[in-house]
Length: 311
Image (cartoon, rainbow, N blue to C red):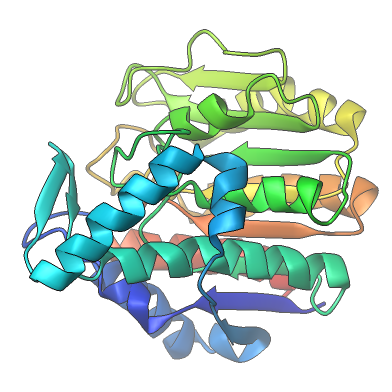
């Protein structure tokens, strides 16, 4: 099987300042580890294009897209960073990075639907799953996975897609965008309570929200996934699966208090892939979300990719 690996140098140009956990070095750590282990040779590396404004408008309010574009392009012209919220800073390179991150997800969707690759991973930043229809927050500007899912439905004509989110933080932005859209089933795990302090009460019947208590380890998380996700995903029979792949539930990551390790990410990916193989011709597009301990991030992405690529 062929796994595409989408990224772009512009994704390193987004810089929220010294000491910020969502840093350009995250992508370097992933690339270096894939090269060192030889896993890079098994991937079809592709350059992410810029997303279209039409695609952004399928997931976000058009007013928000236009205002954020103007703000970020103004910051690029000024050459000075500006805080969007207490956690999220826009730098001169943010606009170029954000349109490549969302563009990677859309291009990967097209490649997978066209059958040129079986599945794809987008090694991009900024991440996306906290970005709501009309608000940037939590390190996120555009919701890459939601943009791609809506592209699959509204442009490519699929009837049912699933979004699976295993980041340690609840994907409140994705839920805000797709809650009530019966063409989408979203299944997620997340530590609760933890930023953004949402998700305990789902916003729609198409959500499978699984709050996980702090300090839970792999066996407990696996059991919760098996008990809550799998029957719903199987019954929904998605034609494609999108993954918000956050690796900050790793036990070495300081932004959460869960205890997952690489073997758990292997297991989670295998369960997702089993659904895709059964119902969706193996079609998966996975997008990087969180993961802030550089070593744990790199090893966990590699574990995820080994399952996707079958190596």
